[in-house]
Length: 325
Ligand code: NAP
Image (cartoon, rainbow, N blue to C red; front, top):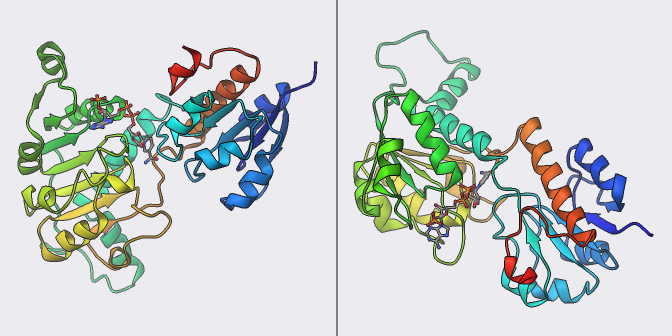
């Protein structure tokens, strides 16, 4: 029997590529860059499976141009880059990589809390500028993390991983989620449910963990930022468009909030221009899942999802189960 054909839009860890090559005829973009739409279509034509990243926009038009395609396996837990309804209408399974990046993403949110709250990046820049005059009693004073109040907007896997970390820092945790947890779960996790505005008004650090979709786009806009304490920090490791970036820039410039730690941006890789120069933001380039271990687990999971569909099996991490209904 001939091997299935799989197209990979960007190199992923070698172990995951080897997994694909064992069972499939693998074609991949060898360059570490995002393919243009034309290149993407050219690569996908005649393939059975597509393994793509969150930088590849997959829509109905593209799926129509590649009628042999049997599966779209995303190398991410979020799948806002894929028009899932269009794939479902064409009976194409879409898969993602849940769970394996939970801890590394929560770790990144935690790193951002420290980086912005304790002014690590500003301090690093001061030392590198060679203008540092030595320790000073009032130099670069930040905010305590230990004992502060953490406000979570979204309590899925990553939101829950934040609660665990908060315990180690004696933080009080308040949360808002579309689906409220049971009282027993809230007790067990030691946190308090509040309406969204109340979470924003109470927290010293607000960390966003919702999936991006039509309802969560600009969930945090001008009014929400205005509800936050003027000393509070906004942390976003979810997806850029969940936060209205223009409104955020105004809030940072006007002192409406204290600062922000942003791993994700509204129009990546472009940023709202003022962000580059604001001192009260820390802006790593979408590194939430960027550890060797996590990226390998994501690659293996995406490869297994892709191969499962090519074998005629139901993939382990299916986003649109309707296609198998
Ligand atoms: P998850 O367990 O599926 O949780 C998703 C969360 O989004 C839940 O709280 C869910 O609420 C909420 N949500 C979904 N649709 C909503 C809507 N229409 N309105 C309000 N809330 C909604 O996902 P996860 O594994 O924690 O990941 C969360 C997100 O983090 C991912 O979708 C991804 O975009 C992002 N992420 C980023 C990085 C990075 O590199 N920075 C890495 C990993 C993940 P319910 O409980 O009510 O369903």
